[in-house]
Length: 256
Length: 253
Image 1 (cartoon, helix red, strand yellow):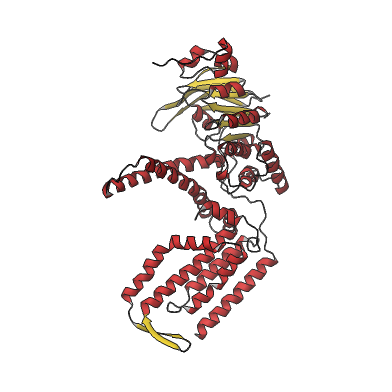
Image 2 (cartoon, chains in turn brown, green):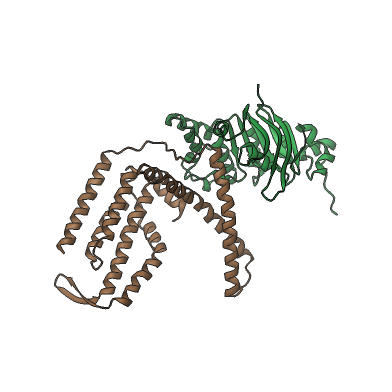
């Protein structure tokens, strides 16, 4: 994800933004667990789950174009995984849409289910990161007793990532400026390897410098926030709605 | 009254055995604006790192009367701010506000005080109204000002800066000089830019090959053409002008 855009979205004001980070974190985890545990050959139920992230994105004023772009970026792996189902499960499974009844391969249903579950859970995750400032997320994780070392590593990873992306951009520009002809696949791979090596080397230096500047400003490993985290009425309403929504869909799944 | 910085017989070797700093002895008084000058690789940045205990060598360093060691490091970092060479590495938070508030938050000040400090500091460095901007969207001059603000908001007694004039155009450099000249804190600035040093600092420490060659009044040291030339430096442009009322152009080989 593009840091600048995510930070910009997370810095907006909306009912979803004003929720406590812990409420959103626990809600996302719970929601993801329910979606993943839906029966693998069901499609209708995972589609119904999409209502929740849709509501979050609308209320949180996150553009669907942005969400779609992020989904596309991370989808290739899942698409390959979903497609592979077609090769090992070719058993005919009946599909019923009201009066319409037909048969498809079981692998196709499983593949579709994987893609839908992926899109629904990813949208929820994007909704979480686009409506919560990263520092608040880290503080939320800390308050939920996630090990401090993990929270710190996550924080550093996020901070260094945008520096790394910038550096990679500069290296690519320098490469383009000197690339006058195609060098052949073997040579191109070698050059790409060298560029990645240079990038890693310089990113370690940068990480070191960032750490120095953090320590020089009194950073001792603890993340401090400006505002104290506090559960409010909005958190209670959000949690209540989510629980009811999940219970209804669970009931629906059992009925099917 | 104790000195701002007092270094006694300080030496440091890199892991490969190369001597980076050798028998450094120097004293910097409170309120002085000191330029740490020297050619590339002279040890200026290493000396700044040593003053902040980012490297540990032999000898003693006292900051505001406190000996630099692991027990005192947090107290010392409260009185001494460090601005690294590249502002991109100083600015790592999502917004300018968050970056300037990072230090005061670590000082565990109350919320109102933090907000007040951030606003005052941003006004002081000319970034008023840019609180919500992402630091990586600022111009080079603004980034530099924001990097200085991140340290000023902690209200340190001493500020050390590594090559703060790098990649600034003349207008941004003039603004920076104006800003730094107006600070009451002790300033220690490592630089290769003799004009910058001459315009800002009243005291100069010349470092070469890890040793302090000479220290004293900026005017005297910076106008010594022979000394500057010997250490790969140059007399500031303004001094060259005032010497003969015309610029000296280096002759091409």
